[in-house]
Length: 172
Image (cartoon, rainbow, N blue to C red):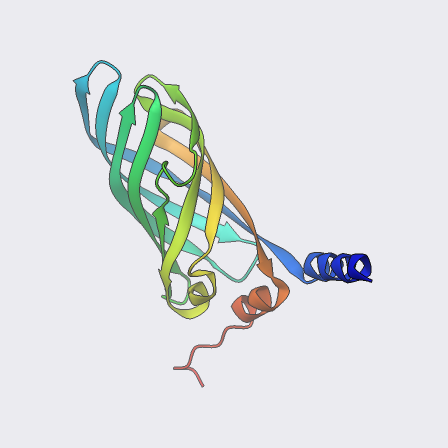
């Protein structure tokens, strides 16, 4: 009976879950790159981006923060603010490498590709549904400071429905 209950719970979780997918593209700005000593760098960073999702959310945004590289390991303190087409705001913060292992491939002193984790820390409108989630994102640097990122994470079917059916309290 316990096995049946566990299988039922597992199948329910699978059937009632949706993948939230987000594609982000933009341009990087490395405002300051400081060589502290061999194998140690400090970078002041910002970017501008646009994003699409498999939900009603799409728009543009900006990130800013710092990146420290020590012996090829990256630790970042970056915050990103997302603006959707209805002027709702969502904020995401990089998760410390001490909490989640960041995997990256460097091109010189700049990160070429990486898989890092981000946490939704604030939001208005449909972004409120994402607050508290920690998500993995793959980042790919390209020529001329261009980049793209892909994030995919699981949300409940009811969360996806609340995002897609969000109605502003001001419009009611």
